[in-house]
Length: 477
Image 1 (cartoon, rainbow, N blue to C red):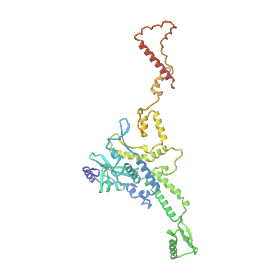
Image 2 (spheres, helix red, strand yellow):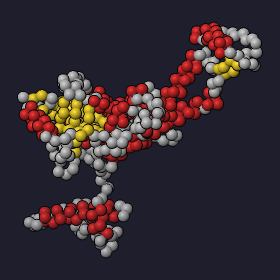
Image 3 (cartoon, rainbow, N blue to C red):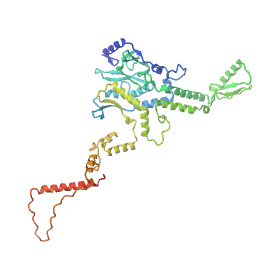
Image 4 (cartoon, helix red, strand yellow):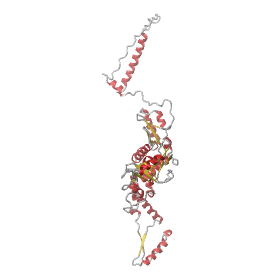
């Protein structure tokens, strides 16, 4: 019988083993609990009001970074690859029990949404947890992503790792449960304090994102106030609290809320003075631009991916390569390694994202690249056609090279001769037969000897060798 993705018997053994030890929740300075309850570690000690990860997503730069990274990785197809003894990898397209899982990881998510949720959890909380579900063969058949805020790593006295899971009905966990590490795939961001605790980029850019939210919030209130700044009424002399309260109440009733913009008539020397610093003096746009750049820097996203200017005289391929190597590669490699280990793939098998969907070149560049590969002799025409989703053609399965190309070994043999450029001696030609004069009797040739046919063949072979070597000597060294 099976429950929660693994055998009850095995689960009972693990539970009994866990009960016999002390399980300590993982915690460290700025680590697990800090990332769940605070936007960055130590925020509450310093009395700094910083938005939580959910609210930080309201800042456009954070939303853009998280969404573009998650969607770009999710759009790449996951391939199952088999590597042979020569190190040549070929995609496995059929007859593998792992293919259905990679095509649809669970009953309610497609492959794209599964990878997207995986990456979003990792970026927002620094950790992604996937619960395994197995079949009678003990093979993983489904993966369920868990809420990273409701999973706690536990470490036993002997160093073994467990995970405490809260109830999750989508993952078919009706109540809190502690499972061994073998039943969880734990993918984490950079671990600054503890090897089981990943740290989100929001730890570094939470204050900048909060600042951006505050700037936009204040601007929204300012323009909701008909672009009129807040201010103060001042009188030339001393006024009592009663009079000040009465004037304040009258001013707010007549000129506040929906009455903004009405004409005010002031008497008794009252003077209105705005108190809000103008946007130009506060360098509002420059401050907002800096917060966007700071968020992009923490997520390693190039600014041109967030709507910023593209570098001049740089090809699209170079921009995509920069984006991949600086931002996506570490996340992709970590995800692949987590799947390989979590699914217990046999030797030679591994998962790999299809980068063609990300690094796709324009049509002219693709055709030019493949043409050079074919003429260079390391790609066959049918391989290039397959990459462009075209059917193979007869005779296109073998790479081709031009006839005048010579191997280095052949050229070395030629150069080893005393005179590498000397031509071969011409073969001895047979004697010419004289033409008889008109009216003269035609001489009858003597019967051919038994070896005359053999001599003719040797002569023809000598001629062929002579002309071949002559052509070789005409080739450049």
